[in-house]
Image (cartoon, rainbow, N blue to C red; front, side, top):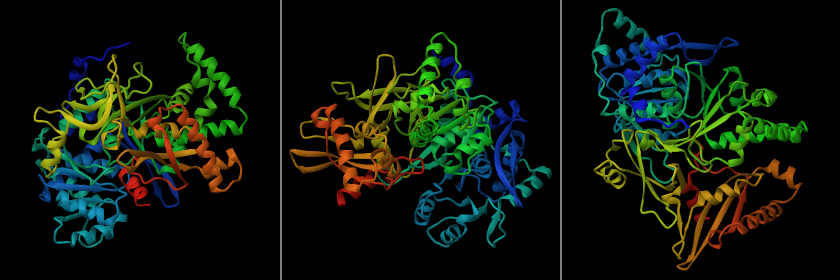
Length: 577
């Protein structure tokens, strides 16, 4: 096994986005940076943008924004994953401005609240937000001065993105060197990211460019993405996972980023764009794998595939890999070129991981938070440990504080990718960040003797029983979700009295799958059948972890845009009920 060295990491050092962009443009000027579908009348074509073209547009847009007087100011961006989003992000961050990426799924009142809190003076947005943004600008508490529309719209008081590019190019042709003469301070806040708020009100995380660049460089020693690769941008770009791993890491690697058209188009886009690398979350991957399994079953090929998997696994032991050829038909449903899937944000069903690997698709897991820019640990192609979240990145220190008898304690981390703090929230910053730089993740976990990190649950989610025992809800949810017709679940506690805490579960089932499996029944009958499965599960758990009651529904749990369950919201709803 290759040991990752700190020297390798330092040799690729990049500290800011200006350097990152120029490095890629110098090395891969004609490589396709972005691919996306564009409508021309009744026809849809795939448009391509090279890194050279991207660099020219970033310089023109930056020049226009600087001429508006936005140097040092905050600029918000909101919209779907698209080329203009990425170009805007780079134009802002490479010219001494602060970018504020906003969640495209936020309701109007939340958009207004975050624009106020961030003190953004400009916003670059999609047409669909026009009325919302115009209304917000009228609020005296809001500092918005410039509204910039990514789409073609000539409304009064709104600036066209394309017009800014045109004006920027005119300025550059006249010798304007404002952009070229600006230095980039890699140590000061350039990115203001609002957390998803799964447990409480969103905090504004302050990141500098060194934070993110150090994370990308370290990650490149664990995960190999090549200039010949094409990544599918599916998760929302405002989120640190997608922004860093697909967009910025893709650019660092000289790869192509293709923009997904939406959840239902994932599999068709994988094929149309020739995707080789897919960054996703477990919920999406598990849904895709269930569809593959069902397609195999419908064709009556389940036993054949199982036998071929045994043959392939036996041959792999003598370093003969024929999986891509044997399972070519199955892999075609995933585009035929997919070689690696990078995932994080939640635990993955072990059988799903094995299933993808059996077909010849490498799954690599990472773990991190917005506050850590984001990756703390990751697997490598040849260093994995089932159940772990990989090895801490080479430029980070990870330790466990106040471990219990099993070595489980809070995960704390220190290194160059740790945030600067929470914006205008010194109290919250002091709670998680020590003076000597150690950041408390709020997650419980442990390190094994080989250095692999394991996450057992969120500190705020842990159920502490009257006997002092800790119950990690995610551990039980993982087992519940293995029941074939269960799509998701949330485990929580109900306090009966000071000595009696009951472990309960809200379970979401798939109406079609349960009908196929158990036949036509009433909801109460389905609940009885599910309860039988839960009791079987309980038999393999210590008494204090037993689920004592369940609620079932077909309605999905409330989630963030990266498919994390909003636990606080769901538990509050159940407690009120």
